[in-house]
Amino acid sequence: MRPPPSLPCPTHHPDAELLSRHAAGTLADGPALVVATHLDFCPVCRHQVRVWEALGGALLNSQRPVALADDALERTLARLDGGRLEGKWPPADMPVLDADPVLPPALRRQRLGPWRFVAPGIRGRAVRVDPAQGYKVMLFRVAAGMAIPMHGHRGQEYTCVVDGAFSDVFGRFASGDMAAVDASVDHQPLAEPDGDCLCLIAVRGRLRIHSLLGRLVQPLVGL
Image (cartoon, rainbow, N blue to C red; front, side, top):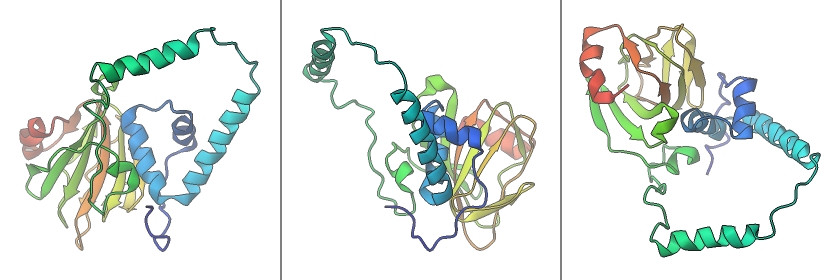
């Protein structure tokens, strides 16, 4: 189920490179989930991803076919059957649906940890992704009028607003809006005063927190 069509289209979008990499399946799990969450809100970017996917399909169709080994099907079926017999199916980390109606479809398909205290007015919820890829993914709920501590980055940070809105040096970000920043950026997102702000954030590398309180709670968040 997608957000109601009456919602305005987001005004902040991933760039063409991110959309093309998402369509090609070459993004790491963290950024890919943030982009997929944006797509649940944004018909413009969904259309662009379909264009990239169609282009990729056309390129694949233009390639010369390569013959499979004679026993390829038998070996594939044997691997699947072996996984079931060994008790590995379904996988232990198979995603479970979340019933929260605020979450868009991309997030309701993920395994989500419990809500935890991060700082006064801020709670966080881990989203499970492959740790080997180097990203940590969190849902943050920031109370109305509260700010995330001023911080910079040692790597990329991808953010999509799920509900509510915040403002920072780049402007106002409301439901569906997405931002991607790198190590050159310092900012302090501030939730609007009329309601909580729920954001999905994927971060690579630890944050550079500029406040004493932020540094004190940073070990609790692991970012």
